[in-house]
Image (cartoon, rainbow, N blue to C red; front, side):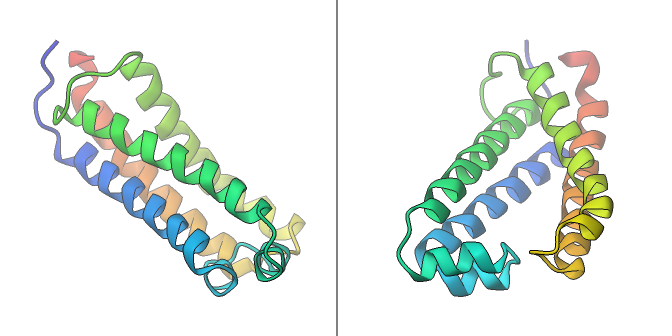
Length: 143
């Protein structure tokens, strides 16, 4: 199966990769980055006292986002098609979009993070999910 180069999925890959790198920054630079990116004061305080918990949680997020970036590159036709490519791209796209809309009720429920965090992170997820969706629609018949 040869998939033509898809600019939207390349952009989606870059966005997921950037998100992964920003999460690595949280691990490396600790509490100030957790605070700046809205991870919540509890995560920042745990990082401040040297707890491994924030780094472990964030490492799982990094690995997930990096995997999503690689799958988007595969769907874009930049690298060899990966196993379960269609299912993975549908799942990744759905998760981004669902996360975007989950931010609306979360802003009212989660008092650890600010409403601004939920707004901005939801807009970022909606943007990345929409980019993936356009790319996925464009290559659907080749999957």
